[in-house]
Image (cartoon, rainbow, N blue to C red; front, side):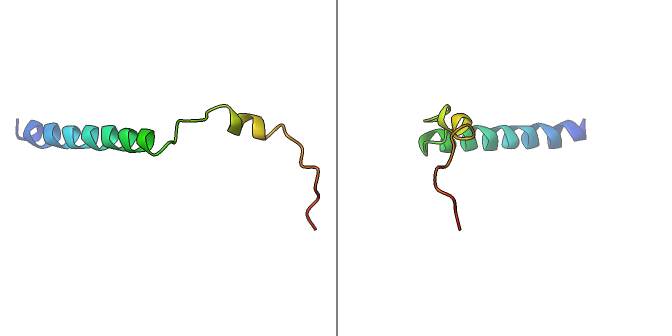
Length: 50
């Protein structure tokens, strides 16, 4: 029973951290453009770097 009193607050703390990280990422624009990074691999660079 003592273990429950330790693990329950720990799991709530980790869940709150995950939710806050998701909210921060959403507000900072991490999920704004999901298609361009996948298409960027297919685009050719015309300029060759020296």
